[in-house]
Length: 144
Image 1 (spheres, rainbow, N blue to C red):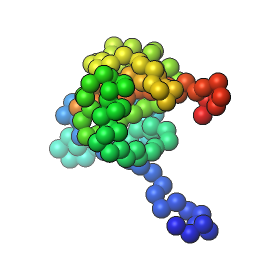
Image 2 (image 1 turned 90 degrees about the horizontal axis):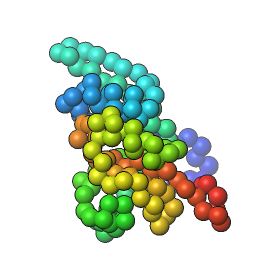
Image 3 (image 1 turned 60 degrees about the vertical axis):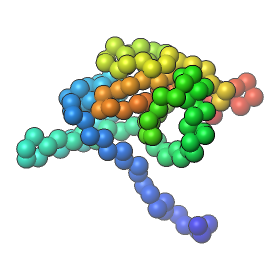
């Protein structure tokens, strides 16, 4: 890619998830997790969509060995489907408790990882397997 290029080729990552129970998914992700509502639209036949701001987006590509290793570290067994959605939060323990109270099933409690984050795993509405993670930083590197 040329160094002089100023405008990124991609401006936004938008993950579109079909939720059979739309209202439960909105209550969970907007109200319990705290994603800010950017827009909502409706159409014929009860068609509804809500766009939620999830902060900075990244696309993490992992090979099967890496996926297995992350599952082993965070959960102790293979649990994640092919796609897992991860949310960085300020307090993984409090957020995990709040999301369980809001209807998520805890798969693994907050666990300190070798890469210095506190990660929990949950099965959430809309059939999503999610990670909630808090970056802990290290004495050498601070909070990166």
